[in-house]
Figure 1 (cartoon, rainbow, N blue to C red):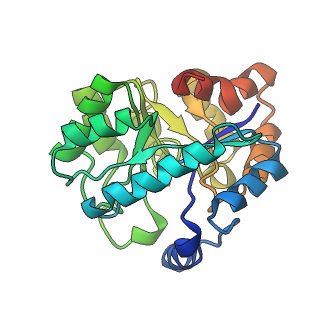
Figure 2: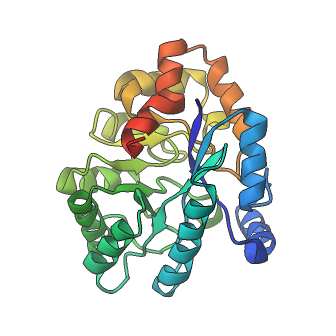
Length: 269
């Protein structure tokens, strides 16, 4: 089994223009059209079984519409041969974070996604701290973008390894996932500050760039039980990332943990 823990999709009526905008902003070509059917096609080519969709609220007013669509995706694909599990989304400037996190739990979501750069808020802000505290209370996973974002290179990084460490030390939520192996383009700081912490890393987008030596060093320092295979589709090719990870020749037991067992344990499936 292969579970891709970090993917993105959009409603069909806005997918094309959203992908075009984000592609131009970040200078990154897409590998899919950003729709649910496009994601399923990518899973099929990679012989992968499950994708976790991670929606992002760029402003608090999107809470109802984004999470309504995420619920529709969960309902549509819950019994499909290739399943999409959508998380919910929340913004650190939402009013009544406690109530909204309780609502997301009641809607059946297994977790939420936040993106400090898109949400223009440092990860150690009160809003994110409260989101994590509520996530602990309601047993929800939290996935955050970590490190540099290609579309925001001209701005301060909102979730550096140092900020992530500060939050982990303060809140200590064991179901926090730092995307991009703890911080895109900040691997040395990840080695120093984050490896060994009670936190998960996903491999979204970075397998093409990190190199086998650095990946194996991170695996040794952080442990193979807290790393999740992820592509960041449509911004990376699922099949290509599967092949890269397999090329590292980690052994079947380790591969199984990274491709599915760690994710199954975290998702409770």
